[in-house]
Image 1: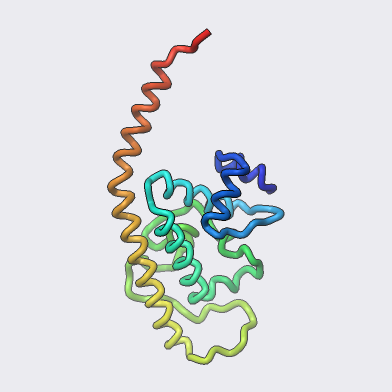
Image 2: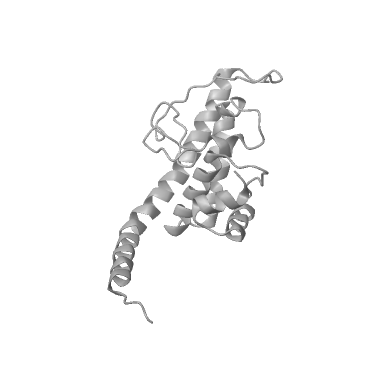
Length: 177
């Protein structure tokens, strides 16, 4: 889909979408995938729920790095593999932005390594040593997610109250002639 179609899909104007792309360092494309739309929606939702720009950027960086350590980037040979991978799915075994299922709890203490579908130069270290890096990456990622979850806990009730109030204003409004 084109930029205008993506903007419609996320409920924002084209300039607003372009601003989000610049702010978060997202790739500008000729055509956008449904996954890219899902990522944009999640970023907007986090912003609405008062998650800081810094935390969203840290989450993007950490999640991308974790997926690279797990070699998930080898599934698609595309500069927008991360954005295309995103889905609206969520759950205890799924990463927050991509919705990628890592097969165990995000707050767990294990990772599965060695799934590589792309030709690469031989690694300097063995998979067991790389697994330690992935586990460290998961640990750092989990810290960011925990911080965001605390923020969401604080904000969700406020947003629900604001939405309820707003719906009441809309229902009670009378059109002017």
